Image (cartoon, rainbow, N blue to C red):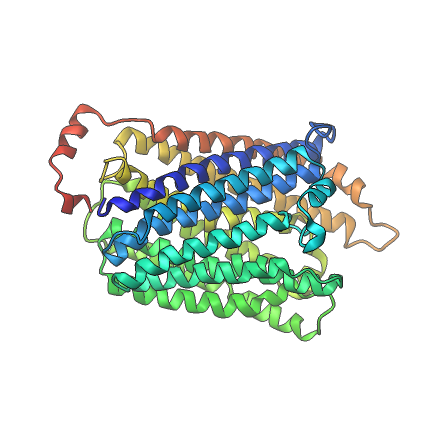
Length: 472
């Protein structure tokens, strides 16, 4: 590890993984409630389980992004972090706010939670993914400002690299677009119009810049490829991502009331959105093929390549499947949407966080060439288990969505089945999805276990001979 202040990333990564495990547990609870409606509903109703599941997703990814930034920015800038103390305070404030909010969802009825947190003073609650009480949203803004200030000051006093510039641009965009969470107009169409300025412009806009920067950093470290080559690829990828993502937001405007020109803009630019993800696949594999050294942390390389492939499949292919207006007319809001969401979030964002953790955590624990061979074997098992099971979940939900459309939306009105009747027929597919979900959890447990497997005596003696330069 190059700088002592990089260690502040460790608690962010650890807490992110804990929240990730919680997200999966609540996803399994929801999955069982799909097929056994009475399961825990007295204690955790479906709407509460869903709020916890989606909010944990957002929060653990933010913790992952923050940890990644605190690690890579000092190394890229070739200087210590501006304020490690501020980073530690930011962690505890964000962790406390996140835990308190989740406990609020679980222990207090949502309407009572709104009264308890004085939501009437600035109403922002009740919207999907943005269910957090207003006081929590204000806390998130304060945390983001402190975080970006810390990162920005570090960049100002150190070297300015393309990776840092792309990363901080994405982080600033993340903070700016979250401000639309405070705008809650009474008109439902207007509400949905601007709601996507947070939800879409995060995941199909500025988060892609964060993804690209972290992926580029990991590839530089594990391949030794010239920085100039990777930076040229990064420029092209983020330009395509922003151009397609910003206007491609129109695919959310198809059926909420804006002008029909969004049918064309949304369809055309959404069709372009898979291109930067395909470029990311080519970029990652080409960098590994041209690598100048064999890094000991081979599993980190696997995660980097896997991120590019799974992001292309989830955000690119599955996004395109139902994004064109003539198709979306039938598939909008079906289980096909859920299939795309699961694979896209896991492939693009969960996997890049797991990749940076896989690369950096061994270094922060004194293992500069990665975990032991035995640990990497366990982590490789975890990688394939999680990827295959997530593909299984996605295929199951895709089949459920196609079946749902066929039964509920394609037949003439007199022949179409009602929503609940369709759900009953989809139960076997939901059981299959649940099985894959359990397998995914087993993969995540294996990922956790890999960090507790030490080196053999032979590996330990080899590590003692490493110089600080070779470790980097």
